[in-house]
Image (cartoon, rainbow, N blue to C red; front, top):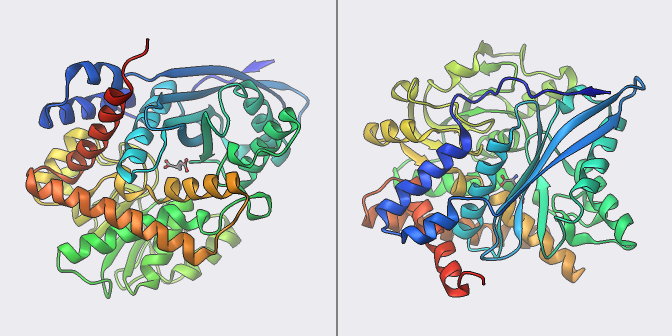
Length: 424
Ligand code: GLU
């Protein structure tokens, strides 16, 4: 049996330490009771499991997996599952805390959670991926459930993975439990609009932000880092609105065209060749340089900590939309604020996914499914309201959008905690 060791992390700073630092900063600005912060700065529960899988070679490999619940004061915990070689317990804890704030900011009745398995899904066969998922689900089966903790896709997982989680859980219960997981395929209780929801929510945030900055979609220069579920659809939507998507990238490399990239052609090229590199009519650009391009909107939609104190002062964007979770470190945030860059924080800008996950959960519990237009209209309402509430705090308290969003969210969770009282 081989034990798969965690590779050296892609992150320079301890992610959970950074998430706690952000919380303390907000507690300070909004004068939140230190007794509450004592509760909120820790995760309620963290489960570490070993996930042994028989590989196609016949050899057994044991992967390490996590499921962390940060908080359930406002409802069952909610959050995705990440399959990536750089996953760590600290990263999953940080991501679970951000989910608590994200759900509170959107005012949906969930707490925050996250899961992850240290693995490289791109190097697993479909059979291996399925076995890993079913065994991981079994290991956390007592920790998840429609009233308890509801997983969803995140980096490296997709609707197929959700279908296997749904099936494994349901087989164990003896009946189909639609509400146990969201982001499912449409033919087994998924919601229309869920696939594109994170990017659609990001697009709504950008739409509101460009209004505030007197910009228009038409001709807007947009650079998108990451071509997964968020980056791909965001590039597509921005292109569809008439903006010039000047650069896009995947985990390997990026492509650039100052006059705008044909996104449909890029999607087709990526499907055919497995990469963006070599796309006709573009020159290549590195992921690092893409972040420094002169543009109106920069959307980091890949992983955490890509804009740090080392490169923040070289960023040339007017607005940054955090499609990923945690792409900007707290130190970089301050540099960007001083430069006048408008940062749309992750818990606002990429919350569209969890909002439509909420819709999917509601539809699953009721076994009554909505039309796509209805899903998108309700998503628009929630995202626009959250943007306006955040903007109002940003202006009235003269704080950046992150502190405004966190302030609103943390206060909501703190209020729920106070109302419920500390058990026992
Ligand atoms: N993983 C996504 C996020 O970070 C979606 C979570 C969900 O839908 O529960 O927001």
